[in-house]
Amino acid sequence: MKKESFFYVVIFTFIVAFIFVFIISLVNNATSERVARNRELVSAQAFLNAVGKNENDGTKALSEFSNLFGPVEGESIVKADINGNILLVKQFSGQGLWGTVTGVIAVNRDVSRIIGLDIISHEETPGLGGRIEEDWFKDQFRGEAIPDSGIKVKKGEGGSDNNPDNGIVDGVTGASLTSAAMEVIVNNQIAELRKEAAE
Amino acid sequence: MNNDTPAAILKRNLWTDNPIFVQILGICSTLAVTNNLTNTLIMTLAVTIVTGLSSTTVSLIKGLIPRKVRMIVQTLIIAFYVILVDIVLRAYIPEISKALGPYVGLIITNCIIMGRAEAFAQSNPPVMALWDGLTSGVGYMAVLVIIATIRELLGAGTLMGYQVLGDGFTTWTIMVMPPSAFFLLGSFIWAAKSIMIKKEAS
Image (tube, rainbow over all chains, first blue to last red):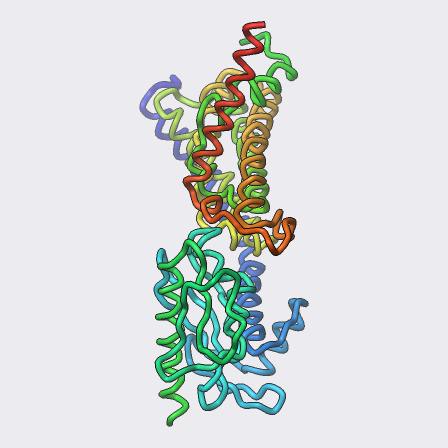
């Protein structure tokens, strides 16, 4: 068959595409369990982090997660007993600047203080809005009082806001829109948690 | 180009015909990932591997590829390797995969890979194509790592996440943002070209 003939081109392209796609689906199949476990692990660790527990070992983290929170369905609010305190824990998702931000937020029973917050995934600019997943940003939420008007993510004096009683969190420099989006996301969650707590 | 020795290819890809500052290819990723050294290293390593492997593959089956669908087949091969890299990252180093996010997929569109496949692998034996692809990747890596080092150091005061400059250091927000990569890359090209011209003159 001539190399430039119509049939050769069609058959060649088909075979090449078939072989490569076949290999990819094999590899994908072989690793899908691992990828799924990684994903589970990330959200389990986010839950544990939000309530102030750190577990780096994967298997332990997964078992501790199911002990404390049981099966978590989507974004339902979970009541968890952490060291004798009942906490409200909720996975959330909200609109960031570029895409969806998902994470976990934990508050105390009467929703007067945030216990912790962790980010599972986001699509913000790496190095700018993407810094919301860094510890200095997330740690500002730890133990933060929730004023009636909600949390404020503000432009600060540099560094992070270390006062847990003012309900103010320092935003990310150079990422005002992501910071503003985080403020909206967190306050939406607080409103939902308050509703649940009032019932 | 039958007088290509491995050493000549190395010199060409690292210096005289460097993909970044001579061919000005792959600039989008230069702007995007270089505000963080760790991400830059992983990303450029991925590009190096993909360039090497896709060039080898193109070179291996070059005799079978009809001219008409040459580019389509090259793109297919490149996409194949990029998806493989993406899957491996997701399964074995999830933290990095999370940090790089969409940039891994964007390696497919990196012109360096296509450029090497088209300019070199199409007309050279597989081993040379592999070497050419790898050294091109290293040439890309070298420039990006230099830019990333400067940007992360001045923009965040850290290197690979470790605090290097003291707490008193005021970080340069501009260094974290894409424009600084333009300035740095421009300065880099200027410096490199000046050295080249001087060498030629003497």
